[in-house]
Length: 630
Image (cartoon, rainbow, N blue to C red; front, side, top):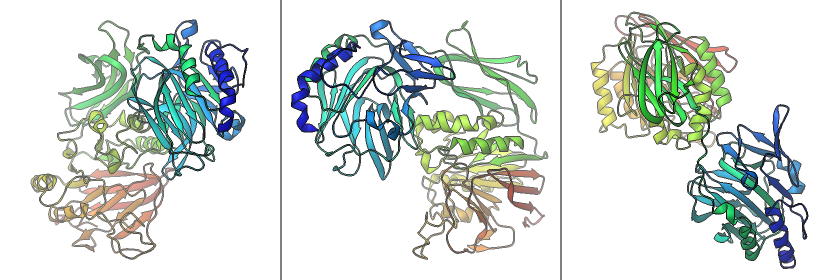
């Protein structure tokens, strides 16, 4: 309670001074918990690595870690990704060790990589309307302290400091809350304060108690950097105590920045991009700038090689002069120095694009966003059917500007498929036109719209987040490409559906019968599809499955017109169709799914499979001389 603070200040200072030297004997109130991250406190116990607390609950170390430094400077180094220390999976299990009325948390840490949502210690939920708990953390450039009080504004306050941290350098941090004021100190000096919150700390109903990570129900951002110690109190420290405590950690804060060199490793395993009859692109990402070698050939020995000596983390090598319709093997070698020990990938395979008359098949998976367990399962099922490539109608990730969504969600889950076949994506709204999209794909410029051919089919890839009206660059480009195409099969792919039965994306059909039943911006392209005999338009955005009848001039017809396919069940939260059956609806289904398309000359077979790999819909199109469809 706030009124208790003055009578404890002196004893509190003595206590925390002793704590900074890791002494067990002290005067004054005990901390709720104290953790020292050194070789004496962290040890493997069976299959787990345990952090032994000096006081309070022990923790379990997730992921990789290193112990860095000598004696007094010893600290744990966490590499980021999904690393951290779990004190309790449910904070209620450790409730007696958590502050309720007032809070002081001190830590000695380094930030080696900034994060938009960086976490050092705390209990937090931040999911839109559900915001609760507290967290000592950081963002891309400064330290931060988040908290919600019972009598505050009903949401978290993120108190952001002004001190720009230097990557790799140790800092002494203290966050204080006395029921009325939030304070953030950096190296003994007040860096920021706020009176936006008041009352006891408002905890979430359930959330993990974490050190070294920002983690709630749908986010997990591991800390990359060192943590030397963390001490937690249920009292609010005064400025004099913070200054006094910093004096006993000043030697650590004055040390120069340290760059931690981890062993060379993959951040993203090798995958394939934009294959043709004579070329294939292989991409991967390493955790450190390195030289790259791609070995390939028609046997698993991979005796041909391409060397790139430029030091990069994102590696992109294109193989040329390949034979059409041919199986190849490949592997990668990544080195820090020219004669250094290489990081080797496994040997994988690919096939170049087939000749025009050869049958082929491709998989379709969309809206994989933020659910690697589902998208990975679907990718595995698709690979079992040996497609020639993957078509992805957008929303590869939940948040395009967040690199972890690419490195922890999309690429690991999809790798069993995309290490063997190239994937051809379009931008969804969740990519937010992020630079990571352009970094991780290799497509014809400008990469947000492009075309490619495979067998007797041609694919036209469009970005419906941008202008696609008749006066737009994409509209003019698409009309030119369609008019010049001599492909037997013409497919267009863009994220937003011109036609959909969804219940609420284009008008809440449970409250009104007024709705557009599709994206009106994307619908501007429909006249081109009808004019130039597009066969199927592939869409996502709606997290369900829908197949329309052939549609011409806004009416369902029995053939000879485009079919619109929504295949948005690749991982995102599921959505539901509205209460009535519109004219264009053929089949709808709520559930995660993937699709396979098989083409042999003028015959097309389409099949859709659920999360248990069970067939739930199919379609056959047989082209006739007059281009009618059946």
